[in-house]
Amino acid sequence: MRTARREGVRAGLLRPRVLWPFPDTAVRRAAAQARAVVVAEMNLGQWSREVERVVGDRVPILAVHQVNSTPIEPDRILGEVHQALEAVPVSARRTS
Image 1: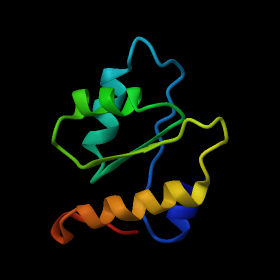
Image 2 (image 1 turned 180 degrees about the vertical axis):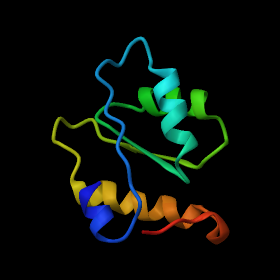
Image 3 (image 1 turned 120 degrees about the vertical axis):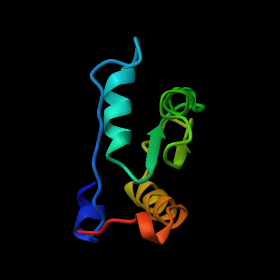
Image 4 (image 1 turned 45 degrees about the vertical axis):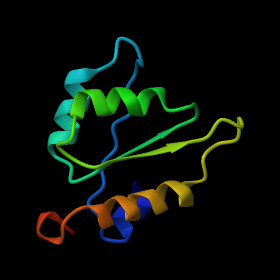
């Protein structure tokens, strides 16, 4: 998030304290302020499916999954942030 902001991207972070029960309200509120959502998770996508369920098709959702027990590289997540921005129509984009 900090790197994206340094690059001029208005990025935010939702870091839930619990995974279950799923924080529907917090995810819905965060997505309401977003032009796209990137879900980075070290599993097979269980959380991104829940985000899709709550957010629906209001914003593009890109998922970054990794299951090999090594942390997801920040550059990979940042690449998905840039890809998510490309999925947003120019008229809906916001920059710094």
